Image 1 (tube, helix red, strand yellow):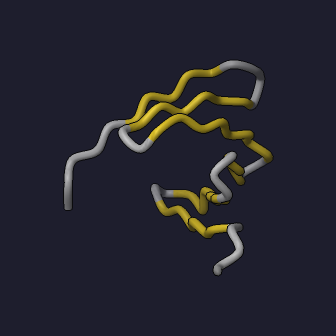
Image 2 (image 1 turned 90 degrees about the vertical axis):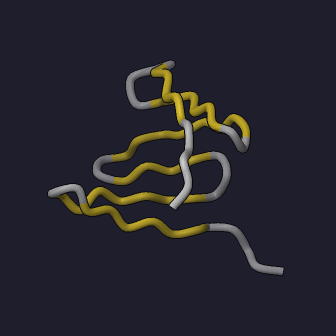
Image 3 (image 1 turned 60 degrees about the vertical axis):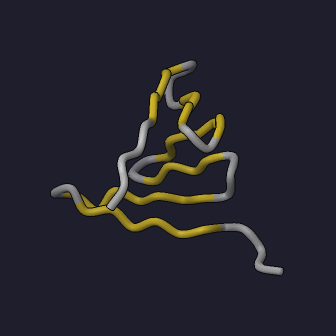
Length: 59
């Protein structure tokens, strides 16, 4: 497991600007789910457990 860096800046009620080593993205929180501009959806299942899936089409 490597070391990573992420900074999350709130830019609206449920909108965030995410800055990491791999670049910048924007995410929108919808209930327990978060959808970001890179095509990933994350759902918070509770107790620190998350489900993450990619919305990108595979080539």
